[in-house]
Structure formats: structure tokens, C-alpha cells
Length: 199
Image 1 (spheres, rainbow, N blue to C red):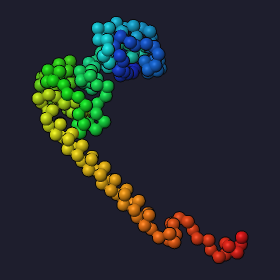
Image 2: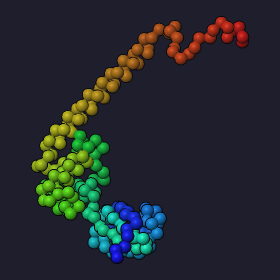
Image 3: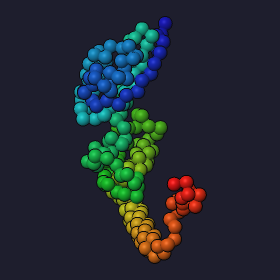
Image 4: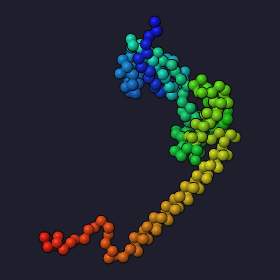
């Protein structure tokens, strides 16, 4: 009879570096499985992928034994690694932070293919290209000209907005200095005669 899975846990751990300390211990501790055994098995299976972040899906059974399946590293992680950047663009496709080659894109697509909803490497490349675009990573000869144009338009728009905001601030400052001194400031209530008498 097949053992019953009581919990499924997903974790992303650096290859070969799992330890019973947080975050692994924090997440797996409550499941009651042997942390040292999990870390040893995970590290053994991922030793050849050192430096990569490996998503891992752990199935915990009712007798506290476990199995795990290793997935391919996240597309964002692979893109940053190939592009040699620490993080993607904060402005998405409106800011290019790096450019990779089509060969790099194909290589990432081939790595990710088993975990993607795609049947061919070309379909996988389209999916990875979408992720790259959102991170501000252009693909040379594929979308770099289009993204550069989009980034230039966004920068011009941002400059225009900043100019408008500066003009508005200047107008507000001017309005304040031109206001007559004897006009009461809203919020400062005038003291009534009755209050004066009471004092």
C-alpha cells in the first residue's frame, strides 16, 4: 500500500549548502522530518550544481519519512547569472540593465524546458524572453532595439514628468509668497470675544 503524503513543501535552497539552520529548519522542523538526513541527501544530489539556487519539492509522509524532487533553477536566477547582474530592473522593460545573446537565451530555455509549459525549445525561449523583458534584460538581435527604444521613450516621459512637477512646485511657492499677510491661515481659529472675556 502506498504511503500517504501528509504535506508538500516547496523550498529554494542554494545547491550543496542546505543546513538544519533557518530557513530550512524553520520550514521543515514543524513537519517532523530528520533535518540532518534531508540536508545530507539534498547536498549530495546538488553538489554538481554549486552556485545555483535549486527549487525543491518535498513530500512528507505520515510516518515522517520524505521524498524530494529537484527542479531547475528559477528563470530569473539563470538570467541574472548569465547577464552578470545582481538584480533586475526596478522599472521592468522601461530600463535595460543588461543584454544577453540569443545563444544564452537558448541555453537557459534548454535548462528550464522540463519545468516549463512548453513542448519545444523555441516555445521555452519565448517564455524566458518574456521573463527577461520584465527584468530589463534585452536579447541581442531579438528585442534589444525595441527595448532600447521603449527605455528611451520612458526616460523622456520621466524627464517631462519631473519638469512638470518642478514647474508646479515653483508655482505653489510663488502663490505662497504673493498671498496677502492679513489673510487668516486656514486652520487657525480666531478667538471670539466671549473666550477673551472668560480669560
